Image (cartoon, rainbow, N blue to C red; front, side, top):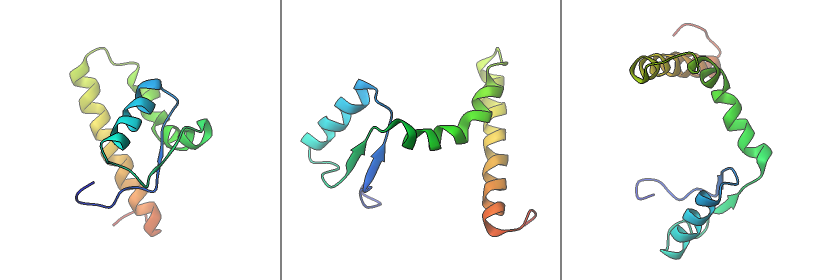
Length: 91
């Protein structure tokens, strides 16, 4: 929050812990101009982006191997999304 401005909107699921934490932050003076939205379908857009990663990681037994694999998958996915926005497949 110190480095960047406060967000205009925060989208989360309807977990009671997140709602109460957001209210406490507002009581302490944080996120005064931020709207907290708990609409299911708005959060689904973000969750759908992680769906392939979540589907693959259920097959791993060891936390270390799963973590390493997911980090690699996220890195490749991030590179692909960046180049896709630029309109080229290779740098």
